[in-house]
Image 1 (cartoon, rainbow, N blue to C red):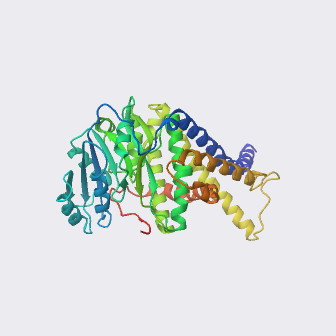
Image 2 (tube, rainbow, N blue to C red):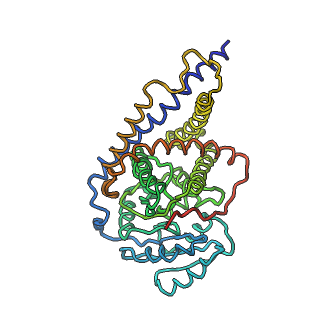
Length: 419
């Protein structure tokens, strides 16, 4: 009888949880994002006008490359032309199978600050970054992907972020540059209305889930304390973010440190990218379970538990969606419980209003980086729904993939979209 009662309570809870979790988290991120804006971002000058500091620390820019023959020249020339007094650029060719090696060697004769390292075989992005860090002359390391274009003032904003006490890593602000397709334009809304909002909120709350691997910066001593990048994880950025924070360092977000990136513009490419991100999250959940339960880092509990709850929510959503599809197909469904409702009353309208509020908050926060955001307000409002659904299926697929297959260290060239 007790078991039946427990099952009944679970079945009644599932619809409320499916619709309530994204509602609560949307307001949680909005509150944190507005707090960050009020305490820090509102007083910042525009990205192209960084304030001066007494002494600009030297910086090493690390660019791991795997099959980046089509992008390396543009990326490295952009990195070499940033407005900063003292920096070097280190390109690490991780056993590319295309003409990346020839492109990099040719560029060494054109770019005086560029050094190139060739690895004999593809050993993974983490190994490439560890190699570059070992060869870097400077304490501050800025890491960008082989297709990224650094903003001319990005290094100055990153250097300023490291002036704050205890900062061991800085997350930059990636902006989408390929916008020729609907999927590309939708991701502009995603990075503006969701990802940027989450990073602001996590900085305000004190702990970040991950830096963005396409633009991040570290102190060498923080990486040393954290054990450097691990070659046994599919998403090096998530793993190293957690280990840096567990080592006692702060990770912060710098929205004025801009970089322009290419994103997938096919459904297949988007699925592969988001599945990899989800697998990285599941790996984090497994790898850092022991530090969490041993109370080594209680300040990380909210971030850790949020991911665990999001994974549970994904499986609840699959159950609810399956019931809804069967019902829509005319399958005779047994009466589960007298009070069971697949879609709780008023939740559709409630979520729509919430997403509208989130879009307006995002416009306030992102207007200095994205012009004419209000023109795409319709898509910005509804993209969070697509964002949550993508999370559902990638999380559900990621859990068994991580638990049942061996870890791999090599990497693949992602979908760079339409140029």
